[in-house]
Image 1 (cartoon, each protein chain N blue to C red):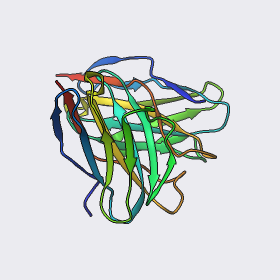
Image 2 (cartoon, chains in turn cyan, blue):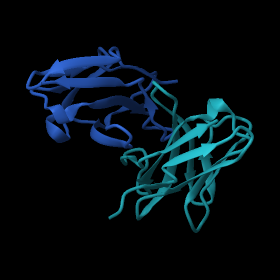
Image 3 (spheres, rainbow over the protein chains, first blue to last red):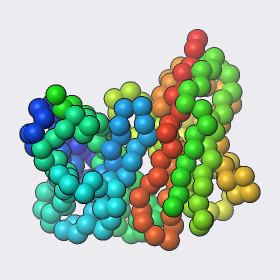
Length: 116
Length: 114
């Protein structure tokens, strides 16, 4: 059973460009979470999605950031007009749909975004 | 709102020595507690979790943690560490009643010296 997949693993963008980060949850998991890890810091929650629904986006910056989890295909975290402060590791996690409050969140390897 | 404090940013230990990584949390409601490990350039792997029941929780790789409600702590321990335990360790909490999001501490870098 493959784990959580994220791609690309490394992404380099110039200021003003768009970054698209993809996450495929574990098989059978319908809950996806995105976290951001700034250098020398812990992970910060960004958004929690189920298929075709955003459940909690309280950690998402108000501008330039969006996330989706379509019926088919991976979850996408999109950052428009990137700035240097967006440079970070972005982690995706997934959990099963039985009882998310008790289910373990399984993390992917992360996408390391560098904005030049 | 919940918060997690990991009191030590770095912990150097000699191989085969015992180690304790400290974690304190703040919450107005009961919580679930987790310890994750992150090896260099990798994602997070669950070490152990406390949901309810026995306050002493055993995890993978010989780690264990004890939930202390009165001290709002969830310290991680291992009686004898190995070089391969060198990694970043994160304590996290979640709210059983509400949002599923994890709130993480700042992390503790464990370095094992030969």
